[in-house]
Length: 428
Image 1 (cartoon, rainbow, N blue to C red):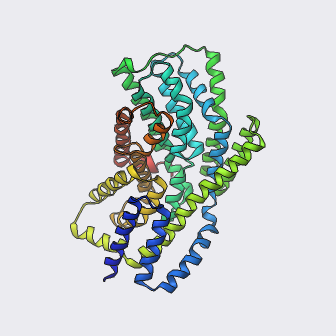
Image 2 (tube, rainbow, N blue to C red):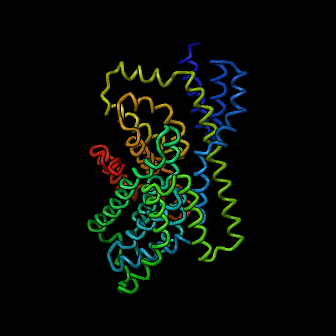
Image 3 (cartoon, rainbow, N blue to C red):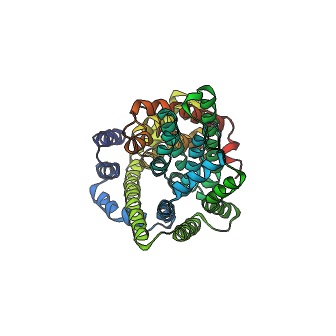
């Protein structure tokens, strides 16, 4: 059997394993080991099993991962979601649909600290959804807003997805974070516009909120300042060169710990935060180790090179290649965790991106937005199921109906960044 045939067979078996709900990290590691052993030899494959995990876990470049996770967990323990939603709600006052705009705004700020789309969707839904239902919001608008707002966590830096993409493709982590600022804020703005348009077209899906005075708005704004300040300090520090992304992760975690402590986080909650961080970090590092072993197999199987030659023979234009990659990302993003999907697919498709001549930083932003789109795209959409677990009384059909306008919004953002690359790389 040829090297390429062995490679394709191992990839097919891995996908079948994933389809039958085998852990993605284990599937990548197992088929990477078997594939490498079949092509080269099993003695060096066993050696990789011994050295690969150690090299990954001792790699200094991966140290920001647990720090950014810890930052998000501290923010959650500080009761950040409630404070953010309450503060944003006072800003929009009596606007029709103002509570929806408040949900989008608070999701954006929360996701900038947590870095996790599903954590944002889960935390904000517990706080905002009951209030929106109580105030006469249609279930479609309420759940659609929160599911879409949760996806901002994968784009607004500091984002673990952007961090891992940079490490996989050997790009600057700082550049990836800076490149994600405008697309992330653009997503926040477009979601707000979507809510406003829906309320204008269908006034009965949302009710006006309570009018608030200027003093109340200023008090509400005060609740948004600490966490917004952490985000601005981290991005400003990286952009100005005050500290590296790794140092920024430590600074952000320390600042968020301080805010959480001032807001009443006791020692018991501190230990819970450490435990949650360890569990989440272990899951991500397990996937990274699996991807590393799978990467050794890809390099000896030469599948990526064969794929480049095959695409070249088809004489596809660069943007046709990009379109095919993005369709693959949307389909996989519907059914897979975003981190696992990036670790699995980027090593395979990145040579195609290089051969097509695209800027790797720009493509990283495009890829992450597309993965973000998959988080709310039917027939699965991971964020939709997260909100379903919080609100079992709302039908999944109503939730899918609610997210469709936001899918359109994301497609508009994707088209804008493809048409105007400066939106992603203009700050670099």
